[in-house]
Length: 182
Image 1 (cartoon, one colour):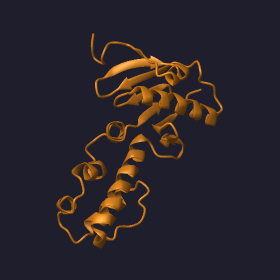
Image 2 (image 1 turned 120 degrees about the horizontal axis):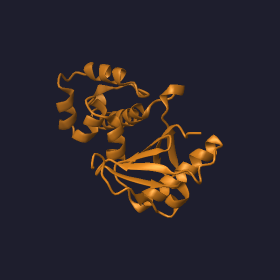
Image 3 (image 1 turned 30 degrees about the vertical axis):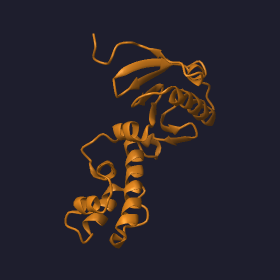
């Protein structure tokens, strides 16, 4: 049995990301976080815009609210108010892969069955991932202690393999060749 799709934010926080059974996919989970962050910044720095309280990942309602602001160039207005470009870009730039944003900007790990995608890995992250995987398996009622996981780091396109019990010790095995190498 596969674990399905999840985001591992840290040891204690995992989010189901399998849109086929009603929840949001990986991209939508990240977009919802980015919208919430931007809304919080707007409420703090541009309270006159009076945005709706909760968009629940609904990008279209969020953009409609922004288009109803008094500012014609709301990007520039947000920048002038002191909101960081990266915060605005994560929520409004739909020409990017939000899975990458989740890995790169938030440090999350995507679980897709027995495949893991991360931006980069530290020994602490590896341990946290191992613990989170065991928690997910426990929640699903499956045993994965001896299951080999394929891990890819997107910052350098390296591949690794490890079992969750090895990850608890911070150990993974490198497959040595970057993606695309012969």
